Length: 227
Image 1 (cartoon, rainbow, N blue to C red):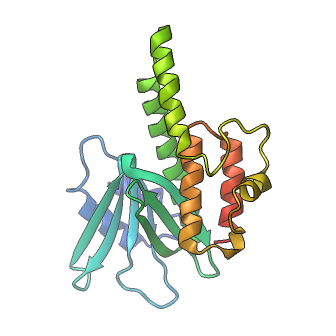
Image 2 (cartoon, rainbow, N blue to C red):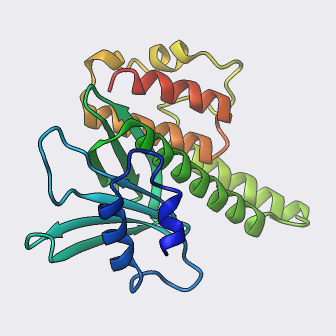
């Protein structure tokens, strides 16, 4: 575990905080679970016991010290339940957030910008890996005509859930068209919760193959500029 600590210390990490977290994680890690990255709060005021967030290859773990640092609360979220992750850079540090399938959004603020970007990158990699594994497992080898018809009907039902967001066969991708054709309010008028919900909707479109990765990235960038 000490060897893993070294790779985090070049991003303005507090060695004592990292060592304390990793020592407590030793009994929590599952078989074949490895720590990928650790982000630690760095508030403007002196914080003796900062909150931290740990990303492993299996889950996200939030660590919150209590009782003057003598004990710590742990809350974890499996990658299967995570639908999206976000980074919002502020004047003092950044805010790293992620949303779950239960529409719950969890955030941890005052994360140094470099650490927040590394958290976002690692989270994105884990979600992409999970999506690729799911796609490989569920990919059909051969489908007969009758089965293909059933699949087509099932896909049509799924598309109707997103009919108010974008047409099933868009002729071309234009970010502005998605906003204007749905008669939605401008992004500048939406609240933070509404912006997060819009990002989740775009992610669902991407997961269902209704938009391409490049289209999703452009939409996400536009929404994040208003957060």
